[in-house]
Image (cartoon, rainbow over all chains, first blue to last red; front, side, top):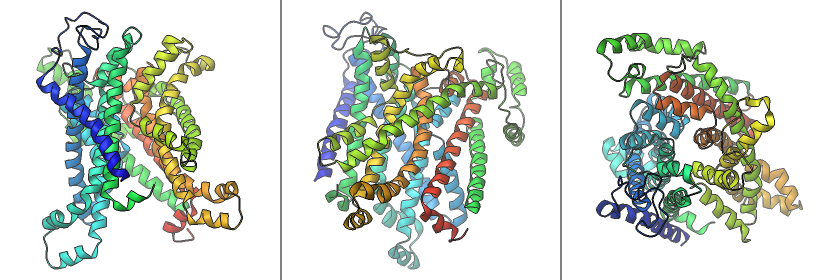
Length: 270
Length: 321
């Protein structure tokens, strides 16, 4: 029961941000790079939430920011998920020697913290939407791969796999018929948690000036830009942060709810 | 234990070698030419070639790799493109800010998280147990730099009791002033770090509170406090210590972003400057040093965990090693 409520609450929060992002695709109050609104206009009037120090409409920036946050989040989970699951499956199925080598490499990759790895990628490429997605996805893939490997090993140790193997099932079918169906619920929960971390990582990158450049308004960059005018225009320094928290809390709740729903033994306890 | 230390050290060295190789491969294989950073925008091909020669990036890759590893072994991290100073001494100067920042924030986070996490589990039937847990859940979703911004707004801009940023030029010659400028950054990092730590402490305590050994100890007449002290805390500390290592590493990285909020001259701001100026030796150097720090922390956490938990020692060493 608890899982269902958590899941529903998370869906509402994520749905809110998603709705804003979808609306931003078809309608925006102003053009994102329109600076004719006058600097630091107060909330109300023509600009519902006011304008920033460059005269851009804050509501417009926030709406575009929702789209960027979700794009980078979903994109990097896709990159990290595909890379990570592939590497994890490989290590899980590999011979002892290859498995050891891969595991050691993964440990190192994980020792490289997400943000540092992301900064490294941005350092050699230029700061762009694609760089952010690749960087965060790459950093995430190590964790996903290590989890996948453990899950695969656990499934492969089962008797029915031995039976299936002895009867000559080729390994690609073993993957699609036995391994993936058994591990995807746990993977999904982890990928949901990674989505929240990816959104935070993108915000940090953008705050440091290493994220997607304008006109891709990112919440992290909005916060960085609003820092200088926090006393005169406090809303600009508060709203993007609040939206980040709403999205990440929502994603975490979805993950927690999914975990409880996927695993009936956890539902009654705690 | 001796044999374990030897094996773990070997693994540490292997990891370092692998990390250095990974760094080398990433920096060389990703598109982008470091020579571009040395020349102006409209440079002729000849100028570019000269820059490559100067950097050694015209040499075959294996030779570049050997000289990179050789430099590392001699603790030579190269010379900055921009300041023309040795990267090693520049990093050492920045560590004067980053290391105290990290350690103070870590200690503060642990001091807050241990009792709060314990309380959230122990008093889960009172109103404040779930509240503490909820606050911790919220805390892990808040971007660390935003907390920093809000704290600056309140304590530096509104109340004007603390500096908004910067670090005294005299470094640690005046410890009082240095500490004052580190106070807000330390609190910022500690707030976010303690949120995630509280969740681990809480779940470790929940496990111990529901354990059979604690019930047995109570049934045998030990008071709750005594049973918790003798059996509970020792068991709860095992998962917490393993997570402390990871948290210390994360704190170190939290510092990277928070230094930018408070314009502190630390390792993080050095990295950001290096990236925006395409200063490859600086980027490489900072990444090597931070990876080394993260790996060393992991090493220390593993060793401490084995000291605390005799079960781990018996398990692998086969009894008498």
